[in-house]
Amino acid sequence: METPIIIKNLTKKFGDVVAVNNVSITIEPHEFLTLLGPSGCGKTTLLRCLAGLEDPDEGEIYIGDKLIFSHVKGISVPPGQREVGMVFQNYALWPHMTVYKNMTFALEIQKLPKNEMDQRVKESLEEVKMSGYENRYPREMSGGQQQRIALARMLAYRPKVFLMDEPLSNLDARLRMDMRTELKRLHHISDATTLYVTHDQLEAMTMSSKIAVMKLGVIQQLDSPDSVYHYPANLFVADFIGNPKINLMPGWVSRQDLVDMGKFNIPVKTHNKRGDVVIGLRPEDISIHTTPTGNTFEFVAYSVLPSGADTTIIAHMGETELIIKEMGVSKIQMDQKIWISFKEDAINVYDKETEDLIRA
Image (cartoon, rainbow, N blue to C red; front, top):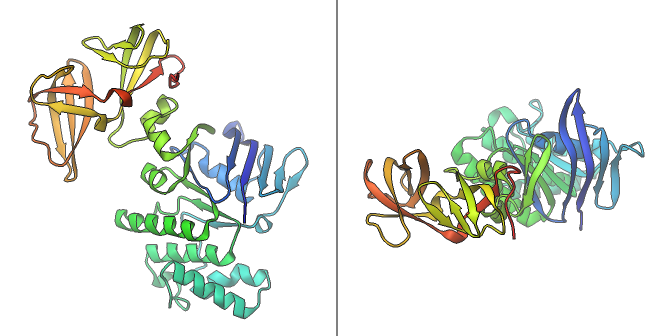
């Protein structure tokens, strides 16, 4: 079923705090869109408004062609009638109910026949690899198992829209990786329109078809994971996305397509910009040479941090610091002289005053 989500000019306040500030966004049918940002940016509040757990102060929300909230028209469809399924951070399983009872609670309210409920429970548990757990209680399962049951409960309800509020944050690193795999597979199988909330950029990058990066209730960038990573719309997005973090260095454009960095110049497209700028360069887009060759710049390896699959190198030239990422175990030693070059087509230039990416 084609079920887009359309949010128009949505605002939600808590006293004097504007949690969601005039947000407009369309989530296309079958899309997996992640709201990503630091704590307090408004991402969970936006999801709760969509679920019907909070009433916005302004704006409209559509699920498919159905208007489920309008401040002006006085419409607020109750949560149970919005045809959305939600998975919470804390699983929200009834502790005194078996898995079967947890999964059929909402189905009984819908007055589904028992044979249909049994079939939905069976199919949903199979999809999350939890067959045979129908008679277990939540206390008899691990955190990862409880989260799978919460997912199965949502699947059994067969909603038009999946809403997930940091569902993996209480799991350890290994379980989070396993569950990312399962969540992406479940979305592929169900093809449901999905809104996912997280502060974990790895979750967002690996599972999403689109990412909306939020700050102080405002969407800073809505784009594909690749574009958010390689072409951050502003300095906030650039600094928030990436591990190791992006290199952000102040510079000056005195002539076309050349940025003066003080002790060296970087040739890069500046798109008619003049004056103060900030250069953005990912650590993996910097190459290290052990001898000066061509257009290279001399630095000193201040710190070398191997992590098995790759090595992070902190390099200094006076007060200029660069973070460099090399695959595998690097042979560079601390305090060694190195020469670096930049992948010029990977450099982004930002206006220092507006903090926005300078585009053609």
